[in-house]
Image (cartoon, rainbow, N blue to C red; front, top):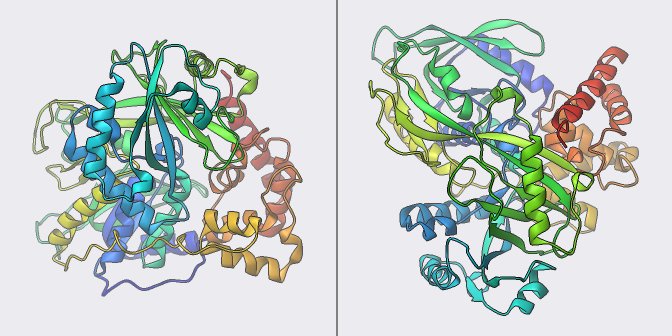
Length: 560
């Protein structure tokens, strides 16, 4: 076991990945985390910061390539749960939101929200006003972020833009936060790496091939078979404890658990949700309000009225979502359906009747799957739950494999803390949770100049590395394309400092160029040429990267 956290160098690259794979092959870990989304990232960070625990993490694709890059990007304080009288959930959400604001101020930004109330909505304005009053009493935020109710329709329009006013009864103004989910996941993983965690993407779990013959932690050891998705090489990883943080894929791990008998399993009910990226719907300015409203033309499978979010995105866009349906396709193949796209466009058009929204308006569309906790078929050592909830469950199979189910972007840190409490006791090491106070590496102060400020907000301390690249080669300060703010040094940093492997990793999750008009399809060849030159790609690799990315975008947009 390790003696304590050791700060590692800033490099988090393809070379780092290769070094970590060799460690996986040859060294015994205390804990191996399977899954590189936000839940797994939060867990590996807590393990690394605790000290005394040698921890590793593998992810079958890119980090945050599933649910954790397909959210509404909202870090919310739980006002919706207050309407359902779930006070504890509200308190937890508010506490965790404030922690994330504090440890990642450049990533997690406050946002004003208007919760619209129309005639016929499930909650009357008076009820929402009372909820807002109680919400304020639960909060320790300053007066500028207190929730208030407004009945003046013209004032509401002045604040949020040209929304429909027919049957509008008023709104509740409240404050929440937004974050780029993929970047939060990356920052969390990189912080774990800096404190000694062994992390690698594109490593697929294949099967359990060995388990402890004794309950003694010093003697016990699990072995899994894994595959390097890039090279095809297979190898084994050994650890004293295995934790699955695979979200919707949890059942895939459990079905290979040594104690699985074909009947006793925790049933995960996966729910599919899609989002659209549209030109800014409300006011085109910084500090624009996000909107929350209840559906009117709900054609989704769930009976209760759904909430629609219209949130201000980067580059003067709006993020519109979400739907909730039962996925009919395989988990790796979820994409927006024609009905889901039409549904969100119709809702957006209803809320903004003076504007025109159709399929030609769509900048990008994406889908994700989130796990909801359902009832156990049999307990068989698992904790029982008799309801479907988005809240998390931490459990252990009879063979000793731990599983993290459910959870949210907002509460991932709390979920990790609870898990490491158990792991530290199992490993017999002192417990010292530091994740609520220790800042992420992306949390540093402001810089002068608009572009410098953008880079700091996005990369935090990585900004200094980007500046170093530019100092060594001034051409890296050139824009990738005149129509977008991204510079070449960002592309290089994605590989050197953020373990990007493919062109899609860079365009879709590291820079979000894929979330701009055209989705980077036209400029993909020149970006691939630049990256190929810097990373020694041959012509075959460059062509393949471009075609793979273009095919991915075509596939995602098939129903758009």
